[in-house]
Length: 394
Image (cartoon, rainbow, N blue to C red):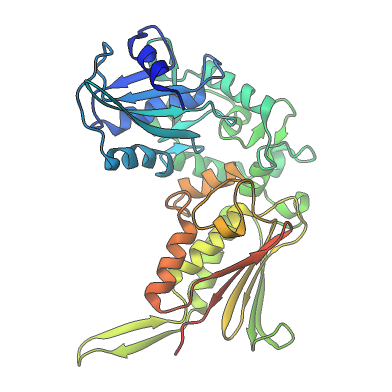
């Protein structure tokens, strides 16, 4: 983060395309657009941009007090899911003689184009606007050149014929603003590429494209499925009462997981009065859903092993290939987030399978506690993570 002297210079530099000033937090959408534009870094400054709150357009202090709640609101813009993929940013308060200032430092994204509610925001000098097709193409080419994650890398053995374009069209309508689609005249390859599902240099889908819209994802990614076992006992050697392999495009897999979880939960009704009853499920559906979605989003798709979803009489086990990723450790899973598969994470948030980034495990633990279950336990190493959810005591 910048220091106070550098900030004073930025307050008076009216020519910089790396600074946005506002006197208050009343227009969150405008702030989100500014953050999105700085993350896209269309001028290719390769330097952070700064959203400065508490300053008039002419650079003078507005005399607005910066509270802890304001700082939390600014930081919350990152996690609310409206900006995709997740921007890298920090928030800090500065106090001067004439008033307080809150600064949001936004770093250029490694995965442009970044969108705010389906629109690519850019900034060049004083101009703030939505990107033209050519500007968006520039961002796409920049991202392809620096792609670092497996899901955004090209699946070079696959072709456009391996994707369900009808499924992609349905998804696109859900995540891109209708007026942007209406004004779009790009071919299907560039439409896919704008959402990180196609590599225009290698002329093939990305691994995310194969996972989300592939007609047969397991042909290219053998471990892209979920093995479900319902076991009448406490050990894998006990009787298996139900089993399934859940595979196909990722959208279908997520829907089937939701259904499978719901039908296997047992609920006991406790009579409260003559007319009312209280439901006590053996597992809270929300907690189970959050932990399953977490496994799908963060697993290592280069592994040939599936996600293992085992339902015993006394517990549920979710085995996810790939250990904790990036800055995340087993000890910090509830409070720290990092993304092995940012394109997959973006899709899951856009479709509502993830409500807010970085809070899934916390929400699962809160649901388990409210239902009377013990907290979920996590173990693992560099090759896997195991989540164990114990049944609610009777």
